[in-house]
Image (cartoon, rainbow, N blue to C red; front, side, top):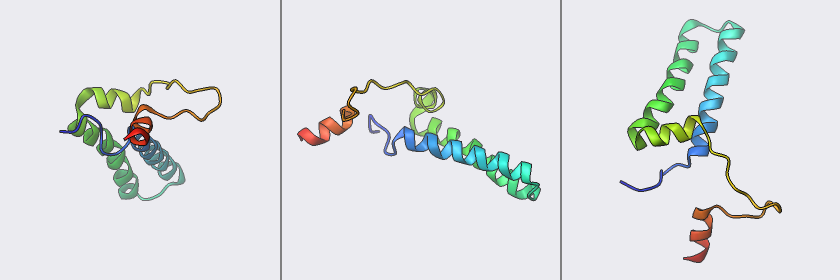
Length: 87
């Protein structure tokens, strides 16, 4: 099992937020119940898939993002980007 997720957790966090927003929007707009249910199940399935892929630490990272340390210029690289640039 890789030490890092195959899909960046930030991308998954965005998908979870979009799915949740679509669920709320569909319920508010009065769309059919099956549409709202499908969106809600998708919103629930995302954290379940994260737990299955990386356990509770990865779920914690999905739901409670840790603010990253960035340089003031905005040109800093993440550790993964730095590693890719060096190798």
